[in-house]
Length: 413
Image (tube, rainbow, N blue to C red; front, side, top):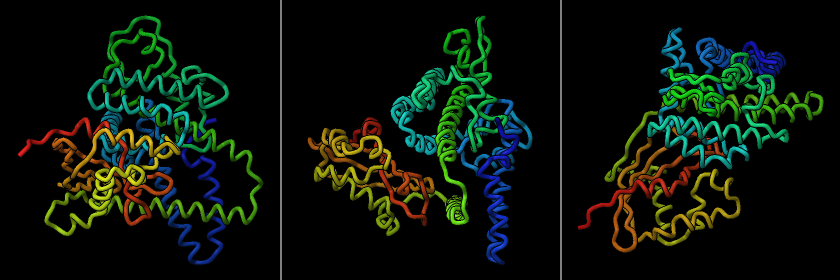
């Protein structure tokens, strides 16, 4: 069963019922209900408009997409599907946007095991090796779906009906199940003409030859996120089936949880709207008082003192989730090969609401001086990026091989 509209999602219908109860609680309740109703309508209209414009091109709206970005795509395209597709591809092909979309994938253990491959596909994507991106992500999706459920079958072996996503925007009638029909469509004759669809079977079996383009590669990332949402929806459906019947106290708890999530999203949207990128340089109080400067100074001081335990505490939650109790050993192995004698923080670039880059000079043992960039993300205890003033902490993205490999030697005095 697919959903004709985002308004048909079970959570949407349930929230609508809860709002009717809220309206009975006086003026404050009616005001909150009206505000929430407006946000619900905007969300549903955006999802439905996206699918109306891009569903036939087999693009899928998933939870990793920025609602603000999708609204901008829909509004700017003004009914032109080709223009909307180009704008959507540009959104994916922004390194920061794609990186932020990839972060939540670590929630799924079967996907977390494959994140190194996903990162290689991401590097190939930005280096223009689109054919490689497509093949790697197809293998990741097949392997993930095969491992995710006890029924051991990859994505290519699933029917569209098996990809219904309960209470998820990818379960839209123009969503994942709809796009899957071309994913598994067979191609026996060799085809040399350019294609712009993610024809998995034809690509993997070598009958489709001309798929090395940014459209197919971006659709591979789009499908990866949709498959992850499908997996989360399957887990959500199982929990729902095991839940006890709804009581009035249960409704109260759900209302509190729902409105808490809505308020949090409203705070994020407001912060994104008001925020402007900025660069801070030595010589100003804003430079030394910026939390990114302070976190970087603490991290590099720990590195200088060989205090790898405290250094590991400044890494993103992703690293701790991935390595568990062995996280400190992992950090030690990465950093102790590059002993640090001193450092200089040269610039702080707060280029996204919940992410920033710090430019530093590293003075390694032996007299080598290198210039490097440290990437930070501001995240909450659930490892979700969150801007100020929401509760959260700046954490270093653990990519020592990346920033050390990109570090450029500086001339000695």
